Length: 176
Image: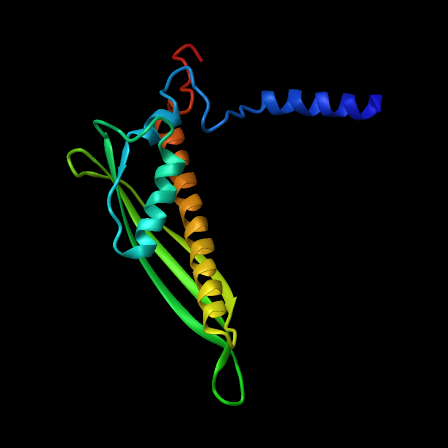
């Protein structure tokens, strides 16, 4: 028991010494990522799935409510493809795969592009003999894919702001 405690404490010391800093924490020389994310306005996204994703991102990014005066604007475009898998003898499918993509662009107030990226998710679902069951599993697959895409976008924006606001690598002093 004492050895495990010692190893844990030693590991924490090494973790602190490696320059580890939390994404959402406050940094001495830069504003918090949390504040930067709270000032991103999320534009409307077309379709029912787009609104579901937008609501997930609002819940994920806005820590203190929607921004009164946003400093950045996030535009997202969704696309999805469903492919039938598990083809039976009568040419019906018993399983489907959903392939969903999102491309996003972060722009400042002057419409200058700050960051672009894409997120991708694959979800599958069973096609049942009961139509309601199939619709329920299909909707669940869409929601799982959209949740994953939302987490990818939020994570990448967090990393963007964490890296953007940090000072560049320590420059050698002229005395060296």
